[in-house]
Image (cartoon, rainbow, N blue to C red; front, side, top):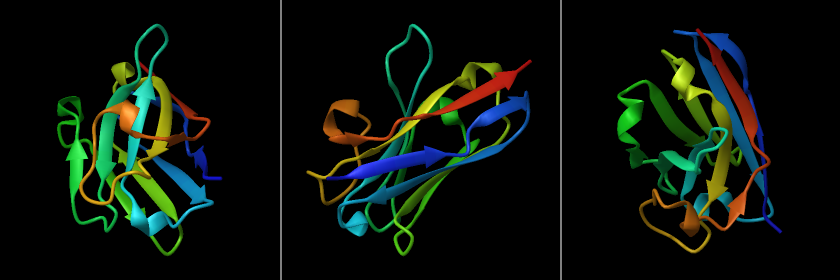
Length: 126
């Protein structure tokens, strides 16, 4: 059974930074793309970033605008989301997802991800 555990969320001021981590277990981590999504209260889950299985290709939502960086360390079965220049609109629960049915590339559609972590809260104060 695939398990994903996120960490690194917290409360920061506008303009601050956070680094989220997601540790995976229960599958061959390097075999599949991973992604970060977020969900704010009353809103649908929203794509943030995805990364190919090797880490060589990354995909970002337009709103990221160079502020976030997704990366992975396959030796540690961990995917990261480095977030800079945070804004109040970035406030949400951030989830990592594993797309275990895909080998190449990455997807921005949350329906393609079979496994999810419990989420980590990010709150940006103005």
